Amino acid sequence: MARVKVYRGPGLLGELRRLLAERPSLWSYVEKVKPIVEDVRGRGYEAVREYTLRFDGVDVEDPRVPREELEKAYRSLPRGLATALRVAASALQRYHHATRPPETWVPGARLRWLPVERIGVYAPGGMHPYPSTVLHTVIPARAAGARRVVVATPPRRGSGSTPVHPVMLAAAYMAGADAVYAVGGAQAVAALAYGAGPVERVDKIVGPGNPYVQAAKLLVSSDVGIDMVAGPTELAVVADESADPRQVALDMLAEAEHGPLSIAALFTPSRRLAEEATVVLEEEAGEETGALAVFEARSLEEALGLADEMAAEHLVAYLSPGAEKRLIENPPRAGVVSLGVPPALLDYAYGPSHVLPTGGAARWRGGLGVMDFMRAVAFADPRGLGALRELVEASITLAEAEGFTMHARSLRRTLERLREG
Image (tube, rainbow, N blue to C red; front, side):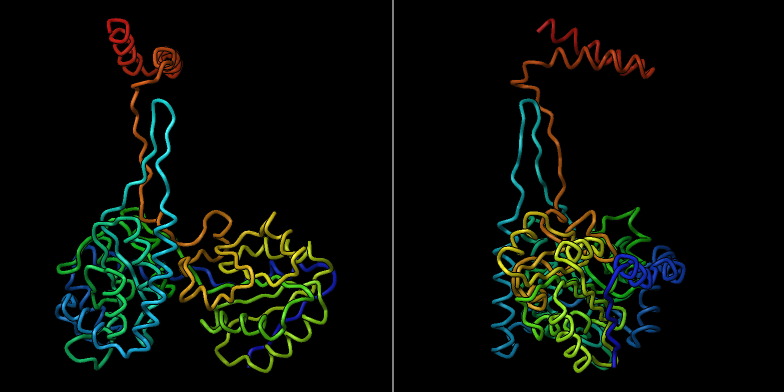
């Protein structure tokens, strides 16, 4: 049974920092993965096939799953599962299509958001299928207008002629993926980054995965775009006396269910809530449950400050109306902020993607969205810009100050043409 750590009294910030410092570093995996990435880059699919046999125990001669197999898997789904996927897909499509950024402009320049053309999605799915991840990655890519979206997912042992779980294929079909490859691990990331025989090269790779997958994404990030380097699941709960202790505890256990490296922390000024939630956590936690921590803060402000310091992947708040208003006005940093919506619902069928920043990365970015699949491109169009001559003259002066003679000459010619015209 997982042990629940309870913290109270002064020094909570230091205790939290020590707890977060225990998270594993990705750098140890980078050295392990680097030879695989380099091998795939050099030998292509021959290397991919060898690593797939070594790590997954499956010899995949051709990893491509035909489009008709995706549709067949979709048509063969049990009715209840098909309905659940459709409901989730609809919620995700509604949210992501609504969050496309608008074109903006000032006289003389426009900012346009154009889609990244070729997207590679990594979706875990070896021992257990994760069709939700397929939906949460492919759908925002499609909403952004990506021309081609392919999914790489690990093959299964003893799965016959189609080595990918049917529910993964069905989800890919429903979400609008163009192709599925039965390839997993670091070798899949390298294949998508550099191309490997039947596995096509992409412009950007997104999606969660184990530390080997994330280390591979980090290694290829100088040659191809990536969304983020995502680590184990994190949850911060901010709650006061009004919260249901059992709901709080179950939310924490749900996110800690992702594995022993996950972490779920409660920050509350309520001793009653802290004690009652701890009882449920200790009763329900299993051997593989991640770290569970309860911080009894001296005030709501301290609880909010601790959550901000954690900058967790998920933040859920169970607060009275007045306290919730304070959180909304100055929210703690987090990948996604949930006002009473269980994180487990966000993991499946609410709207925002469940691919979220971890390890404190919420300090500088949010969760996966349409803008991860778009390029912000500025268009300079001087028509209608009355101050162009003034800008050119200023630029000539700056170019000369920086010692760039040809810059200045180019701009002087532009100035001459403006005077002539």
